[in-house]
Length: 255
Image (tube, rainbow, N blue to C red; front, side, top):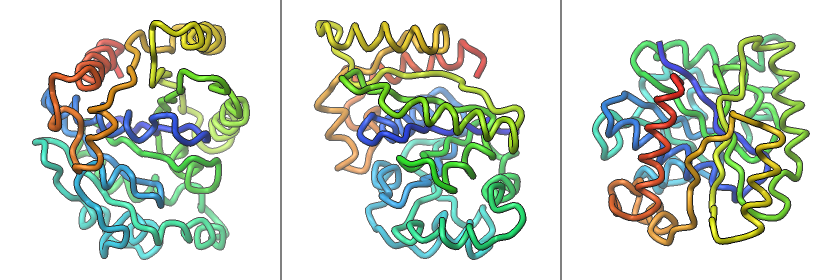
């Protein structure tokens, strides 16, 4: 049965999708079967894996709202063992549709992923940068959460609200939900600011902070525009090396 992990931070631009896609790719290259679920109407995870259309016939929207069998929406990525369910701009209306469900609206995704969870080692959910019903669905379906945090001023802004959401989901909807780890992104070891952010994050999360830091890297930023994880775009660049190391650390933690 797959380990289902949400990548979540309500603050945008923190490297959430980059971390979700590239950690998934690194694990797939290590022989793990990984499914990425693009749960954001911006469709960034989809484009990072080669799907540039914002409207597709069989997307996570149809799975969630039209009862499309989950397996029918799954696509193969360029890397062996890596699969994804694309998003669509239609997903922007899913919150309204889900809100009309009287019972079980928070667990629709959980039920849909149950159809396929035996086929993968990991299912990664790239959450939207908000704390609405889509994110609650993702957290309810997940065993754990990975929180990417940008190594810049305001890094912890709004984080208490997200932690409170995780706490509420754990209390009322998913008692097994845990924070599996925190990843520092866009990290510059020469910067006093980055070191200060690291100190703050360690004070809040302690040993849940991954030792591997993701650096600022041009090749890492360029890769999505070519529809490729960075390991395919430039496997020797600093970004690819960092995500490979993160995958090793991820596995060493028994996640």
